[in-house]
Structures are given as structure tokens and as C-alpha cells.
Image 1 (spheres, rainbow, N blue to C red):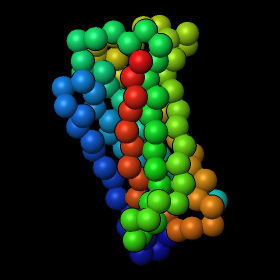
Image 2 (cartoon, one colour):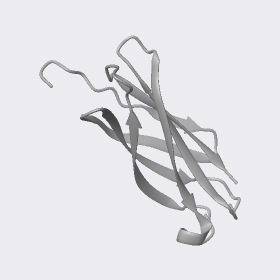
Image 3 (tube, helix red, strand yellow):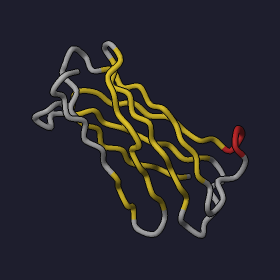
Image 4 (cartoon, rainbow, N blue to C red):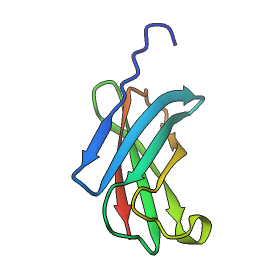
Length: 107
């Protein structure tokens, strides 16, 4: 989109995890976020890690939300140092797309 500014966000989450939004773009009615997660904790997660992203319009209003997970049954235990990237599509529900905020929940 001409004149469209994408904003990227890096959320340091203390010493336990880093979430980096590497790239965002719009694909039709979806906002897309390419997100990298790194376990910086000393803990091994035995269930998985879920990344939740919220799409915001240019006025920072919430327009959609979606999540993706790294499950132990797919990746093995989420050990310290585990790093992977996931693509998260977010339905925009007819709204514009300006930025995205992502958080994690490890179990």
C-alpha cells in the first residue's frame, strides 16, 4: 500500500522470553504477523507456548486477535534457548490495519 507505514514491536518479557514481531503485512481481509519467540527462562515448558497477537488500526483500536502455539507434542519440551518463528493471520473484520501487539503464555 502506498504511503502505508507498518509498525513493528519488540516486547522484552523480563528474563523469561522474547517476542519479536519480525514483519507485518495485510493479505486481503487479514493482517499477518511473522513472530519469533525465544525461551530465555531457565524453565522447561512441558505443555507449550502460545503467542497471542492483537491487530490494531491506525488509531490503536483493537480490530482483531488470533494465536498460534508451539506444542510439546510437535516440538518436544520447550527448553531454555528454544527459538522458533510462526506466522499468525488476524481477521481484520473490515477495519484498517496499522500495527500488532503480541504476548506469550508458556505452560
